[in-house]
Image (cartoon, rainbow, N blue to C red):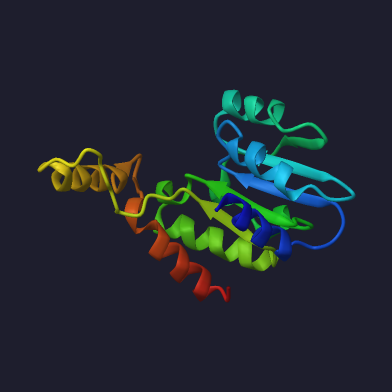
Length: 175
């Protein structure tokens, strides 16, 4: 499956060198996985964004050989489309469920204004499967979803509502 996904993303990219922005990059697993699969003439430059400077420095240092990279602004809640000028691809992994509805709408607005492909993965969706199965699975799943929808510092996170919220926000902004 991962090869099919990488091929589909690669087919959407412009020719020449790539500028990839990884939003909420954490330790850089997206760059380590995707960059080798996007190899092309002209190379790639990844700009990694994360609020945690320690994990951000690890992410930059762990980019694969032949890929250049650097750190970008960490707080994504206030950036505009101007920051994304020239970007070939926007990625994020395990991020959307941590956003509020307003943050999701703002992200969709700047991404669509940038006019480049977006690859968002590993989002909490409300489907929880535990193995081996147990009679308490539904209760545990509901507790997890409630936790993901928690209020934190005045922010109500989307949690398992993120995929539907993202689809609606991107559609509102013309994607």
